[in-house]
Length: 144
Image 1 (cartoon, helix red, strand yellow):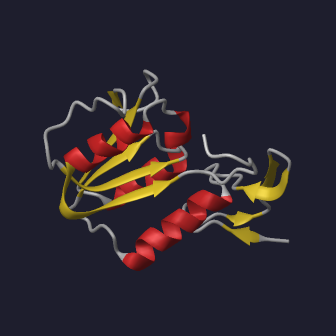
Image 2 (cartoon, helix red, strand yellow; image 1 turned 90 degrees about the vertical axis):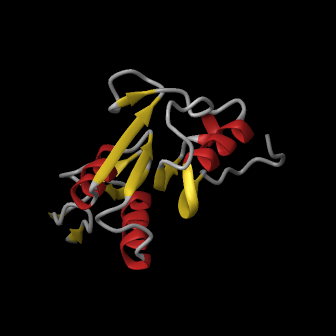
């Protein structure tokens, strides 16, 4: 069965990943969540070519695709070498109201003080602009 990746345009069989069948693009490495996010973002037009975008701990496929579409696209990760800017999400080195769009997916579940991280994202986001924030769903009985 052929699959189409809406991020890189590859047509072909997807690879199995993490126990899930045919979910990882063989070309860009995107997973189903990346393709869904990318499709939603393009359809809703949360950002435009002139926007300033911050990608927090981005998957390479999202970074590549959004960088191509953006006038200014910064990437940030706590691990050195994974992004342009190395910083902690709870103490970002940006000025207030610097970004018009922030993409943060599958990050907050790893942050000890997630409320502080959310306050920081709010601080660097321009008023009336967008934060795209996703956390994975878990089958646990109690919220941690």
